[in-house]
Length: 321
Image 1: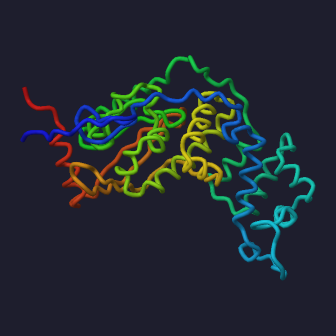
Image 2 (image 1 turned 90 degrees about the vertical axis):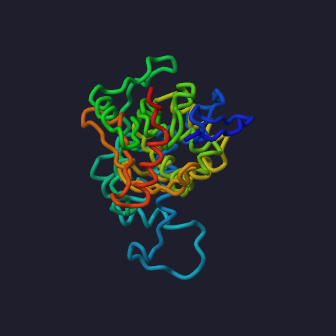
Image 3 (image 1 turned 135 degrees about the vertical axis):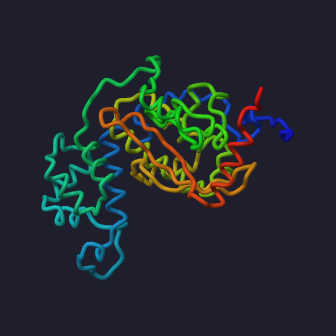
């Protein structure tokens, strides 16, 4: 079967060599603003996180009486959170302002319960309030290398799209099935091989992901976790600064401070060759190296998506010699 001829496009997007999905190809902006990552400094990040979680709660959510009259602030007041957490109003105020240098784990757990935080949010609160300072890799540091076992697992997943995600959501490696589904990361400069960057800066991603807004928000939520884990990473700071400058959607979502680890779920794709495809994904990490993850995609057995994925992989397989 002859492969379709796809016209080339002008501008910052270009087609991958197989003529399938569009991938970002333009150079990145060298953002050199304040090293706060649009709120990456731990004091600012803690302030924004606590205020955002306080704002989403109402008195009836936490069994507090709601007195008449309009509230001047969205959500609960500081004194209400302090009451629920069993701390003084002054202490909570200083906590929200990032002026408590080393709060105890017990106090943080009490705040997490008062704010109705989930597991990911509670872990994020601990990381923001008690940051572990580490030497971050410099801009010119050696690139992150794929763990040998993850590489072997990746190479063995012929029928399942899979990739290895590293720090900052960088794409470190991928298999041919991922190339067929998501696009050719190899056509990009290594600095541009980043899931968040492609999601927000490549217009084609809005066509590929049927639920683009949900995918984009998940990426922002994961980057917030990354910022909490690595508050001294200047490369991450510049990337988030750049995304904030170039994408209004990113700025809005970042300000909402979603927090969620990348674990498992379902994604729907509008693929230009095979149409609608719904795939479950799973994230596998080594216990001793959480900065690398193998992300795999699979269709429900016997489903139309499995047929579509099989057709896509057959079409993209190299022609026999």
